[in-house]
Length: 150
Image 1 (cartoon, one colour):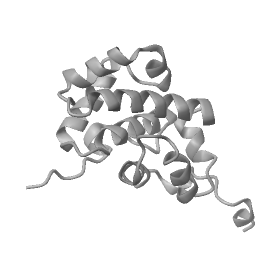
Image 2: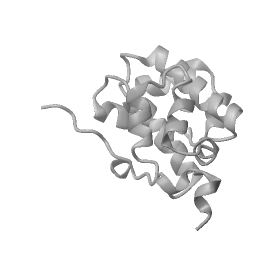
Image 3: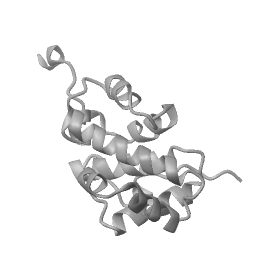
């Protein structure tokens, strides 16, 4: 039987509640967007949170070997080297380019724009973008200012 898709609720995440929760959902989505068992991706997410990787800055502060060690401890070994690089590059890149994951979303007019922004990062493909964006509440997007003229 195939692994069912893990939801934010399964991980205690509410992407619409706060900027930190949105970051945590992107982290989890990156880990589960690969061809790995959902339980392994979820365990890796929990391992990062337990190790204090609760913001993009933590990924910037730690070296590649530290990130690989967390992945390995969570048995995320098939893609550990490439995933470590991608986690660092995506999370730090989003922060440098937009200020935060929250800003990437709230400055996007709609889901399509957020999608196009995300897939520019190496390691964020269609599956990862879908997993992440399917759980982002619509009210977080900036929308079109002309639509607000009620």
